[in-house]
Image (cartoon, rainbow over all chains, first blue to last red; front, side):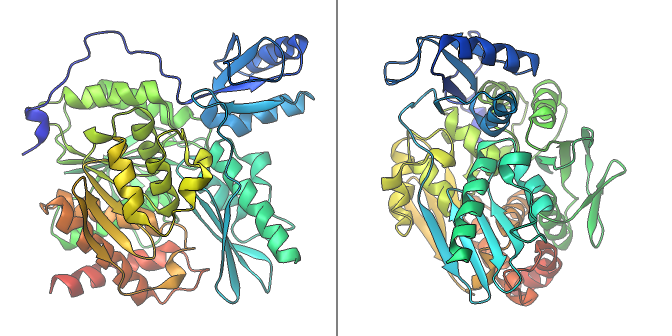
Length: 183
Length: 284
C-alpha cells in the first residue's frame, strides 16, 4: 500500500521561489551587464539583474541571474556577441567550481574518460568515439547521437551544440580525451 | 500499470502519451517511431520486454522532444501537472528531463492529489531535480551511477557538474556516499547504485550488492543504466517489492550484458534483445 494515503500534503501557500537551479553571471562592468541583459532577454531567457551575493569578490555591482541548467546555451549567446562573463556560478553556492577530476579507464583498444557524470569512450586505433554514457539532461542523448561514430577531429564540440551543464561536462571529458590521446 | 516520463532527442518530436509498441530496432508511441539507442527509449524498451515476459501490459509513455533547451521538458511538466489525475498508474518513472525545481514541485503536488498515487522512481535529470528540490524522500527509488551518488551525497551541489572534489574522491566507497546522501535527506526511500558493483540500499544501510557476472565493457556502453532502471521499474510494476526487484534487475542487466558479448563499442539495443532470456534464466 502506498504511503501517500497516510502522508498527503496539499500546498497551502504559493509555490516559493527556488534558487538552487539558478546561476549568476558576473561581469567586469555595468555596461556589460546591460548589454548581456538585453541580449539574453531578446533570446527569450528568463533572467534577472540583481546585486551580487557576498561571496562574489570580483566584478561590478550587478550580476545577472540565469537558469543554471542551460549554462552552455547562455554562455554561447553571450560569446556570439563578444561578451564573456568573469564568472558563471551557481547562485546557491557561488564558490562551487566545476569538476576538475577525471577518471581514465583503459580497456586496451578502447579508452574511457569520465568527467563528473559524463563518460566518453574512444577506439584508440581509429580515434573514433564509440560510446557516450551517463548524464541526465536532455541534450545528452542528442550529443551522443551527434558524436558517436565520429573521430575526435571530426566530432562536433559539445560546447557548440550542447545546451546544459551535462553538455559542459561532456566537453571537459572530450578535452581530456584529446589530451590523453595526444600523449 | 507502469508510466514512464522522458524526452526524445529530436527538436520537432511532439508531446505524445500512449502505450509502447516495441519493434526490433525501434518503439512506437501514438504513431511516432523512436529508435532504440539510449536514453528514455532504452529505458522504455527494457521495461517493455520485461513486462511482456511477465505477462503484464506495456508501459505507458509520456514523451516529448527536447535537445536540451527545455521546451519538451516544459511540455511534460505542464501536461503532468494538469492531466495526471485520470491515469491509473502503479509506478511512475521519471527520466531525461531538464531539471526545473518549480515545475518539479508542481508535478509532485499533482501526484499527491491523485486518488491512488503511484510509486515514484527517478533517474537522470529528474533525479537531479528531485534532490535539488529537497523532496528526495518523497520518492521510492533513485537509480544513480557512481558519479551521481557522489552528487546525491554532496548537500551543496546543484548538479553533478559541481560535486566537490573531496566527495568525488570517495568514488570507491559507495556505502559511505549512500550514508551521507541519507544523512542530508538527499536520497529516495531506496537506492539502486549502478557501477562495477551495484548496491541496493535503504536508510538503514546497504541491503544487497551485486557484482556477478562482471562485464567490464558495460561501463562505457551508453544506455546500460537506462536499461537497469527500466527493468527495475517493470519488476516493481509487476508486483515485486522494491528491494528484491532492484536486486533482480541488477542481475538481469548483467546477465543480459553477458549474453550480448559486448565490447566498449557495442550499442545498448544488443543488450535489450537479451533481457527476456536473462530474465527467464534468473526466474527459473
